[in-house]
Length: 461
Ligand code: PEP
Ligand code: CO
Image 1 (spheres, rainbow, N blue to C red):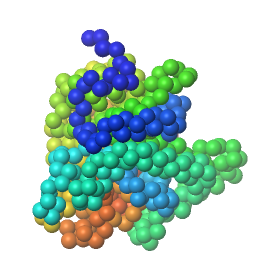
Image 2 (cartoon, rainbow, N blue to C red):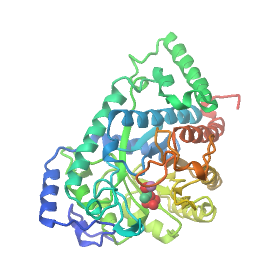
Image 3 (tube, rainbow, N blue to C red):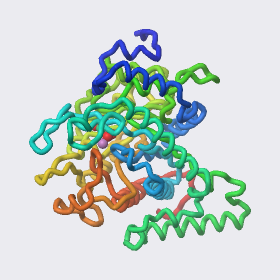
Image 4 (cartoon, rainbow, N blue to C red):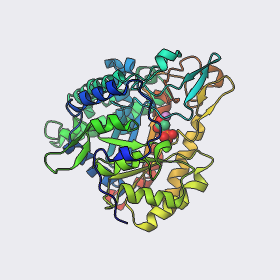
């Protein structure tokens, strides 16, 4: 069926879930106008390059690592914090590359992940009913009515904080910090002197040797920029449509619309209605996009989503981020994988093992157990292998800090330990040790697959 014409404003004709009610609409429009007049954060050429790389992921020739905070915070935009997040991403990416022996496409949930959908519009805090926290771009987490009232100025601040974060990330990733010869230095301080840190060090030593060997053969980072810089792309859930539309631009080269607030944006589980405003906005922009798929998504809905978001079946355009939970993935994922496969649709399948495994402990902490996260991931890989499709990547919530938000892992964090360093503004994140442990686990799975590839000529498994 032919689609109705799209325009940058056409989403306004459709119902939009999860939009804040801004107290002063006239002022709000003035803020959006100011954002519209700001320079774009990313440019279309970079976005197209990411799409090309994701097309490789869709074909099983690369692996996707998308990770970062559940909700970034304005106060977290200082240099050290950004550096530690980058370190854990680089560390994980190198572990995955080492296992899979293919490029790893790195996308941060960073430089714009400031808005949150909520299951309930209000929450009880100390006996008081307050509007829910919706992310720093909307209101403040402080539990008072004043702080929880949406404030349009926060949108402008979100733009500037995204710009400042991205600026530092660009400097780090292209200014020497990400040089592969520095692979040892990405080991975070509190991870270093642990069995996990040692395992990483051993791998880093192998890489350093391989680099020295290549240098001896005349291949060094002077001649090969890939060795001393990396591409780290940015992403966030594009929840607040007015903000996203204000940061959309027409590319002068192609005449197409791009969302220029991030390289990659996704639609959350709560806003993927087929006749909703989010779908309408997304279908008209040319970025690579994602959509979260939970247990309530049936086969027909998924096929319609795929058709709507990628009518031309362009490889790399669409990533399906599945988040069923360890107990549901076995029944939910296979029929969806078969439907998409049998339709001949090209997608990236990515596993978010976080959002289907969240629960609240008796002492009131929202958490996830490391074992469930690993279990969902393991099943994801097994299902794709049995269906003959590519397990393209992973989507994780994590931080480079030593937080106590998710249970289990090498340190076996317990219920009682959660309050020690429970710092997240929204969902519980893996800490650096748990993140490294998880990437080593995934790397082992990928390594087995890599060793079956005849083109690599590897003889020992
Ligand atoms: C998230 O990614 O933080 C999130 C809210 O996920 P989902 O839409 O899958 O619930
Ligand atoms: Co989350």
